[in-house]
Image (cartoon, rainbow, N blue to C red; front, side, top):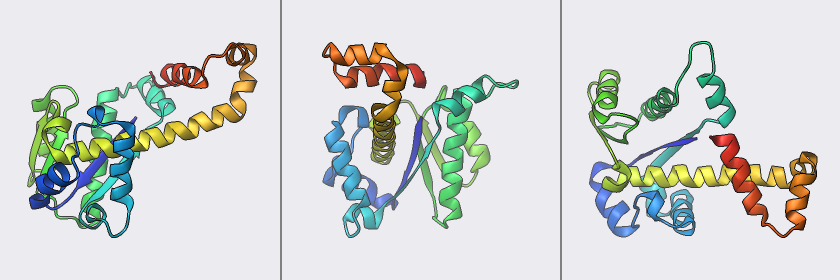
Length: 195
C-alpha cells in the first residue's frame, strides 16, 4: 500500500493543480497522464516543483499482513491512519506551516476527522469520501501514490521475471510457452500477494 501527502500554498491549489495541470482523481487519469504529472513535480524549475511538495509512505504486503495477524491485531485502517499521521508530522518537522488538511476518508469520515483534530488541534481538517475527486490537493496526492505504487510494482515485476518465475517451476514456464502474456501472470501474482 502506498500513502501520499501533497502540500502547496493555499492560493495555488485550484489555479495551479486543477486549471493549469488538470490534476483529477488518479483513477480517472491514464497511467501516462499520471506519469507526466509526476515528472513535472520532479523537474527542477517547473512551476509544480518550485511551488509544491510531496511525500509517500510504502507499507509492504508482508508488513501489513504480519501486523494484522499479530497477537494484538493492527488492522489496515489503523495502519493507514497512522501512515497518514506520520506523513503529516514529517511535513511539520520540515518547518512547513500547514493551515488546512484535506484527506480521503478511511472508514467513517467523522470518526477519522475527530482523531486528526485531537492530534492537530490548531489545523482546519476536512475528511471526506471521494476527497480525491473533490479537492485538487488530494488529487495530486493520489497521483503521487499511484505513480509510486506503479514504480514499486515494476521493480517487483522485474525481480520476478528475472529469476523467481523460473524457480516457481513448470506451471509458470508452461503458461509462457502457451502464449499467455507475462502481464497476466504478474497481475495474478501481485493480487495474491497484496490481498
